Length: 275
Ligand SMILES: [Zn+2]
Image (cartoon, rainbow, N blue to C red; front, side):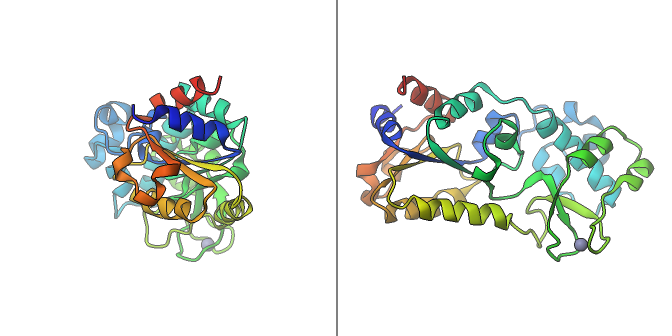
């Protein structure tokens, strides 16, 4: 681990922490999008019927009937989100953030931070949250909670029974779909996005650490824009689990610490440095 003392110091001195959590962090919470190790074992019906062997490829399936889509989504949501138990790292992160003002911007759509007990108004799921659903018509008819219907559907494997359970839009009657950018008409959660922007604006002059956890090449949207943002305000600094110091721009060298490790080790070290 590089720069650990500096990372601890920046975090300890900060009043505000903004967590930027990527796909590698989701992996710590059990959701490995591209992994093929246990998919066939966990979802034998899906693997066999559709010849897919990872969550990512199951979500990418096109040309399915609505009952089939909801069958797949409900099985995945049930295992990874409804039955989710926070990891040791998630619990430590909570301990760390409880002492600060915080906001969490995450690319992981598994509803983990909400379920781990963080303030729901302080979370922005950039790529959606699959325990929510949106209208499939292409028109934004709002977000609805999908946990109840996912629980019901996950309990049945008969497609004709699932057919009757497919949720419909209250505005136009079209089938609902999970809230992920898997179609061309994904609408980000504009309320959460607005809350995030207000939070940033309100803390422009506050000592703030952007804490990057598990941001990798599958979530580049979480690197460049955040670096530019931090660069703009002198009170803001950047602590990164996954990068080396050399990967950060020269203008940020004084107020950044890239430790080049995994999220679990960094969070553990920050807890140890906070005692
Ligand atoms: Zn609709």
